[in-house]
Image 1 (cartoon, rainbow, N blue to C red):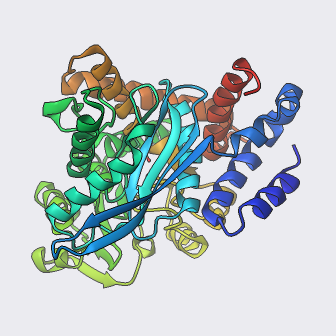
Image 2 (image 1 turned 180 degrees about the horizontal axis):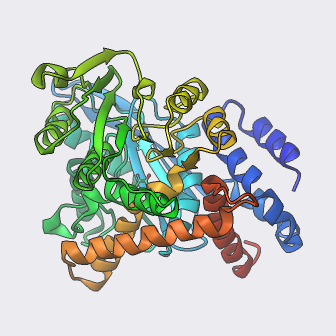
Length: 445
Ligand code: 2IT
């Protein structure tokens, strides 16, 4: 495989799609050696086929705001690869959404879903619609208009969306409700649904819980224990909430959360009341964390700063792509960080990853660490297909097993000659091999 020429070709075809090109380059660099041991991959142009989405659907989303004015947004669904199962992946509503971001997310999703051990292909969708400051009725009208443009491409064996940034249980409910009306079938297409209409127990918690189960496996491999560790978390949405909840339950001290406005440092650590307050902050729709410092004396708000300047044992980026850069990584390393487990998708820049790996700090990528979310979505699909609902304990047990399995795959493919576990390499090779072998088995198509 000639990475330079593949990347040059992609850059020429998709100029300026920086997140997408970044995600592709990381995977190619990690799988290069293994790929070259399989001349049949080269003959069948597996990489060239894998880096292009199977299909991209783009549509106009027109809706009425509360003043009765007409609003227009762009909607997308990137159906990236369905070699191992129906397209599966979240929907993101955020002002920053563009094709580059959704292509990177769909590409990552393909390998992440392969790692879960469940039969799911990769996809991602979304819109540049910003939920910030919108009323509940506006959110509903937007969700319905979005589905009007997308429903024909969805289905339980075709493409099953879920939430992502800006899309939670409420939005999934509004989208699924409209989808159900249009197809006249209650077929479970969408995961993260309400418990009363086919949702799975533990799905809201799953991304954060799964991440912490992964962290536990990482620490165990290092003969270390999470109890008493200090943790920096970024973000304050669903993923940060689940991670804070489980970390605290396991005896760790979570000392930061963050938003677009800055971060909170709380040296006492989060507790049940503070974690509940994260939900309130989120529900306010203002997308800020500053009010936390007014509510909980002893904590401090640092406007415009990121939590990575604090001294902690474990860093868990839980906000968004490229939220931790090379300078942040140096600061963490200088302050003695031991483990960096990415919970956001592609949370670290390539410079940050290089810094961690060359310092022999344990770094694990989002596609392994956060796969518990989509894995539990896969469990929701199973429950829907069987027309039954499992207990929280049953789902949590399966989530545990899946996260341990993902960790094992990373160790198997990522252990280097000096014993250092390169989780990035491990996750990318394990995910890639499964998708590549499936594509080989399905022929050139
Ligand atoms: O990034 C992700 O894995 C998600 N947003 C969840 C996708 C899903 O289908 O549950």
